[in-house]
Length: 263
Ligand SMILES: NC(=O)c1ccc[n+]([C@@H]2O[C@H](COP(=O)([O-])OP(=O)(O)OC[C@H]3O[C@@H](n4cnc5c(N)ncnc54)[C@H](OP(=O)(O)O)[C@@H]3O)[C@@H](O)[C@H]2O)c1
View: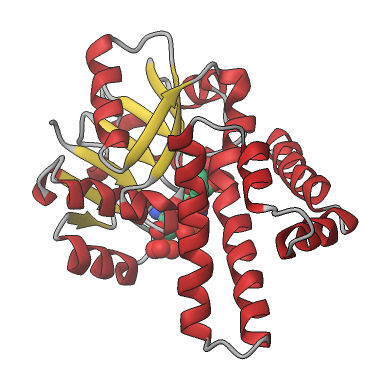
């Protein structure tokens, strides 16, 4: 594995660095991270032992450079580092709304990969969509896949699906946390201690997700299997349907896609 650079190390950059280091894919000394403030760098260095710098150019001295700043910062940060990106650098974008064509035009770099990771990367359970630019060679693709697979699962997708993939995996952890929080609130309402309520609700979500992945059954059939005739669960299903749960979730994902297309 060659040197990996990260420009920006907030929620997402940190999750990826944490995943890479925890899985031992790269030695901490082979990872160089830049950020805007020394406080962020001190925290990252203390947690992961990686090299840190306030100089974004320094983070470009790597074979693979991740741009882990907010989408609004992309234009100015790319303009700043453009002179420091080598001919053969693989530039990795993790921002919504920035196309391969736009990234190539702004950076002048040939080899570009668009990723949409998610924060569960921090615990090795990320789901990353990967869009590979035309100029990338198989070795570049293999290296990026090795990195993203070190912190979870990944799939290569065509560029036109990236907003859908972002909605389904990049943004959706936030919605799942809201679901877990509201289930725990309900349990607390019934008298369960808060910490215990989070353990119950989160393990139920983890288990249900595994059932979808490992049973090969349709999610609707799995739902049916929990609903005994005349039982308690079907009463809850009715309450969720009355409040438009599935429509609310679809609208939420559609809103993220619409926003990505405006960025
Ligand atoms: N959060 C997610 O779940 C998620 C999921 C998928 C994709 N993404 C994408 O990941 C990217 C980063 O998002 P985030 O949530 O990690 O944002 P964030 O927590 O706000 O982190 C942004 C990082 O960029 C650094 N930064 C800001 N200006 C900089 C500059 N001029 N030069 C170098 N570093 C600079 C910040 O440094 P300081 O800490 O020193 O201020 C911070 O470390 C975004 O494009 C986002 O769309 C995020």
